Image 1 (cartoon, rainbow, N blue to C red):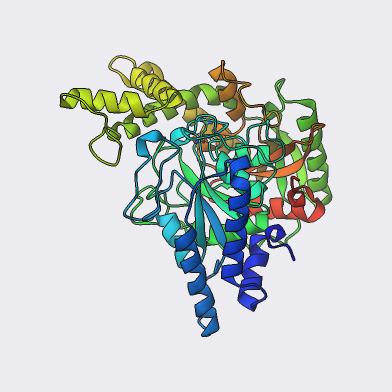
Image 2: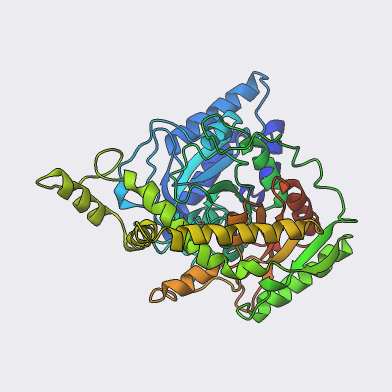
Length: 484
Ligand code: GLN
């Protein structure tokens, strides 16, 4: 048995039955991480001692017959923008290179309480701004399918860790696509839950009206398992929803008879590569054979989604990042007076993409411009949401490619930020509308790079997404393939 090829569901079952121990599992993934991280750049730090202690505790509980938590012994990698107690949390920035939180984010606390073992913190674009991990202040993560290509971003390290089997499960955050786009590029499954479904207490905020935390796994079944632990209301996050959390695994095995899937014609535009189009078309046939009915639908205002997103997200970022000023949390530059201390600190420790966003956001929010930019973008956002409401009146799911292309090469978009921003064209709408969306592997292009299929559902209907994704994965093996 090769532990790294097991799914999360299998790992948890084998630890419960005693076939493997939690210590063996943690050692195995930490060992792989030690061997592979230099080449893949997936982790910014690992939690070896704490992970081994937690794994020993799981094995000790089992030995005395205690009931184990639903994720007992499951190694999990957590994006470095999520606070972990006593473990450096940098958000991919030099600003926070020495920041050691005194508390766990709610999601981390929930994972640990369920018995999961946090093994390390994954690489990311600085403050989650980017689509390639090239803006990480440390080093880029690599796409395990081909190291000349980016893994996507901003949760690129989380995607690389799972794709290279350096962790069976990772946690990412998604503001405009940062779970789904790297999942697509790396050939794994990534779910952005409904806005408000998962607590963001302890997530270092990028754009608060868009940010959401979610699981990155090999299978939809694993995503359902992790969601069961991390979803639900949190009094410490006032935006977290009070809606009841369903049993996400209960409906996975139901066929798709009667399920109505809207094929979004607006998501098959000119920019979509031939291989992506062909594989997504093939996926539609698989879903039909499982009983689903398809019809064409339109989301006409989503053509403005990138424009609206790249106003709203930088505006909110400029406000959220004002707390990094050299006084609390952060590194501090030497200066003769307080004003210089602020400016030198921010000038020295923020990277270029972050400065870009802060400048854009500050400009758009400044007096006299607010109405023309933020307010206007918010109105467009409402029209996009209305598009979704209309579509979900007649379909259960919306289908399309996650990204128009497969993973691009390092440096390919370096001179042209707009080209990089366009990688988010099909993912940002779900954040603007607050709906859940998944990316699952649906094939490979001629260069053997993975292609992702996106499924979106109405708010709080992750179950429909997970069911369709799981059913698709019973008929296909793209999610089982591994890079060499
Ligand atoms: N690529 C998008 C951006 O740069 C989305 C990032 C994210 O979802 N965190 O803003």
